Length: 316
Image (cartoon, rainbow, N blue to C red; front, side, top):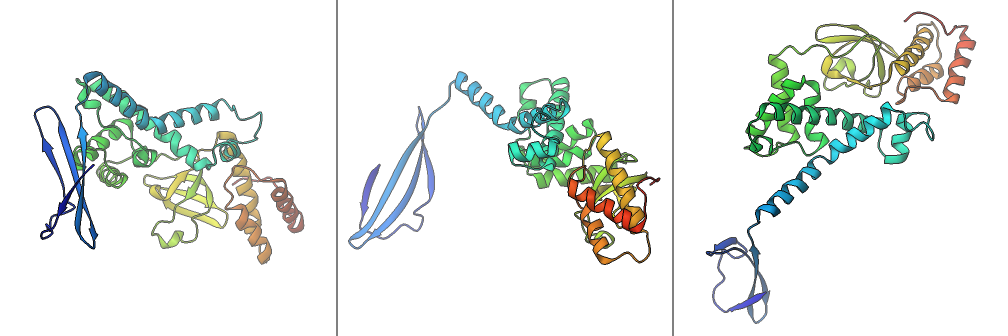
């Protein structure tokens, strides 16, 4: 650190950042000032920016790849934990396990798992199609950044990512840019409806007034249309656009179980003269964030069925 006393007029460009280049190295000077009663003192810090050797450059790239792949490794690990049910010795469900062990929701786990799939698609397709290492330099570095791509097919995912990088000026794009690019591709390309009959989804109201207040509701897909789905929620049937649904990624067994719960709720809701307290219970059950009822919830639902003389069996 060096200091230079300046008794004259202050340079209005103080605090500016500039660089000096020599034959062998680069220097970056950052100037800043402190005002004292006896005059003005400027402190100048000189930082040398040395060149990296080829081996150091390779190490840097390797470490940067590890940082970029951290969400990918997490998603792959969660996928294996879920698919092999390695949580079963301590927890009944994958959701409970993720909450207790990693302090995040099943939704967060699903995002990471889906992002790992997309990241793998990007790297696999790029490796097959690229002719140089430079083509592989810019990859997603976060789950949020890659999330919009999950709506597209693998080939479209690569196309959307490449366009996003170009629109970001050749650097890793923000999630906002990726989302805009994906939206444009979806608008000009008819994307197949990804949902299936019997699937459990969450309703995303967005700006649609007909779905206002349904943001916490789960639903069962009863019909798949070209650009929408007909779904059954706790309080009725709705026709919902694809972008207003989000799959909860329940297993087939969990979907069957929730379909049965939905049927039981629907039969009670369709009765005449149902009391407000009953509606409150049904609303609570229609907003649970797991593929099962707790013992208390099961007792409450069974009590209401007994009180109104409604059986559990039927067809949705």
